Length: 270
Image (tube, rainbow, N blue to C red; front, top):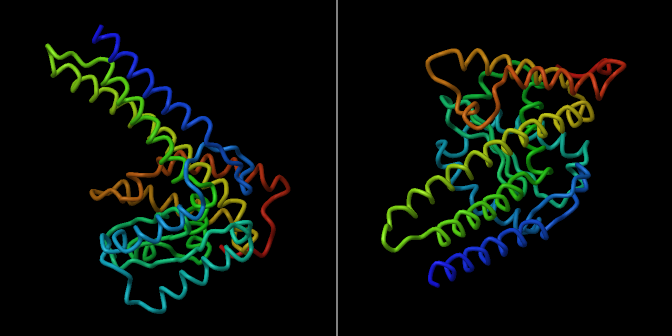
């Protein structure tokens, strides 16, 4: 009887988790996709603003290089003003971080975009900078963080349900092992979605950069730079959360050819 009761409770927890995930949907006006999200854009903005100081502190805080900071902000705002990103409710702010050793760029939900001095120093053109920022802007407008939160809530709920249903009072260690397996599966699922998110952000960047006056092929140069850095002893942090640059180069080439079958327009900044 107790086993049946635990099983029933586990089913209820799983059902609530699945219901909360699949019935919380929203159409993304930029991508056109129907997404599973459980937070509003205002909540995304508030979450990003709350987390921004801590994230900046992890990379040495804001860079004291006023000229470089202004350049990053100018390019970022140019992309916002020229694309659908500027038609969203997100409040974009661009931060240059002081860390000149770490090669990384990332975005928080709601429009907080960060780039380290380390990766900026490796970029050789304004177009490359635009490609990196457009990619991070793509994450924001595609609501990837909100999707990841919803997926995380789902997998945690299902893992909790499995633990409840399988708990054996005569062998407490069994639930720990099974819970660990469930958590590992959840992590694999999240990583797979994360890679898809990265490729979608690349796709959006290919769309955004020409509208702001930049050549999308500059993004390929960024990927080539990351490949070279990855071949050295210190792997860029950027590569720990992003797909292999070599794979992304091929995808970028396909996307550029698909979006511009007549060729990339002339006169765009590299």
